[in-house]
Image (spheres, rainbow, N blue to C red):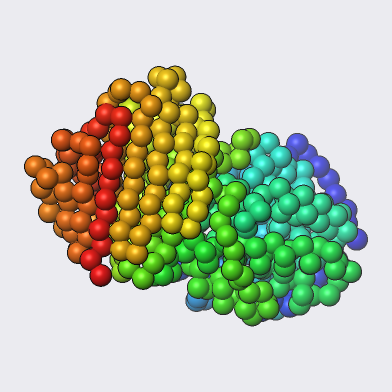
Length: 498
């Protein structure tokens, strides 16, 4: 039985039906972020609350506050049962004071985490269930159609958990509609998530696997079509992920991707196996990424659009950037260390901070205001074969310039050719992993490190300087980069000594 009152945006529905916890097998454990005694660590920043938890605490930026409100820590490897309940009770009592926590995205993640914990621990608590129900009503009234992308999909996946937990047909109908529509919309033909962030791909795949486990272990609805679709999309996503993942189990840190946030690929493959979902051999295509692998190296290249036309918020101006790994990282993506708007965020999204070509240090796509993109580079792929990739983009069209880049793939050698269709000065940028100790020969336009020689033909000027490599959120380390100035064309030869 449900009785309700509604005052502005305060939800005070009295949910009186007894709720039985779901069958929950556990899923992938979350990173340890609750250290006990009101101390939390998110995004590599630790904070201890003294007398009372301030769920609106914003001294470290909105994303830190969001993480505090996600309650991922309920499903970390270990948390005291008494403290977990205390934290949930504290949150329930603070409901009318909440700000960021009642936005739909943190509601979506928090509700899943609460349901998983309550079910795993077989907890029946009316106060917590009433709060959960009201949170889902709020979510239903504020679905993120204004943002779309991964936010709306997360809303739908969370509503599926709410539907099963409360046996609610309204929640289920909306969840099913969103999941079916958005999985078709957001998963590219090659299995990649359309926002083109491997980190978000891992996060969404983890959530999708959770939903498959939920439906399989809790027979409530006849939902063959939904389950079939989720399993099919999970297979595609797992296949794409295993294709782009390097041998050391790391992902390319392209676009908004950071270390230490999402479950790693090996844990997702293991989770999929438990659900009888296995990766298949796939070929990268419309995600715009390509990966070349030999016995001596792995090369990952970006020759795609910056992201979906209506939601490129996690995109960087990195057209034609690449990553090269041998038995360890060598030429790398500079990574992500913050979502806070400002100089650091602007740099990390800029073309200058990626392994590609700039004209007058300008961006190939205009990235601005933290999560905005304008004047996007449009890519034309001219050749796409096993050992050769050629593409051009018009990101510098305001200057009448088109940039063409080709990758020639050998057994122990990579040739990169850059062409500018105008007699104008350009700069090619190469960012090296902090562990690489470079030997730079300016007269030969040559760089050596770790048994690899990089030689530049078509330029008589190379410059060694530094940049800030992102080890994760709020964690940066100085590393070396090489900037090569050229006109019209540049050939870069990378020789790996086997």
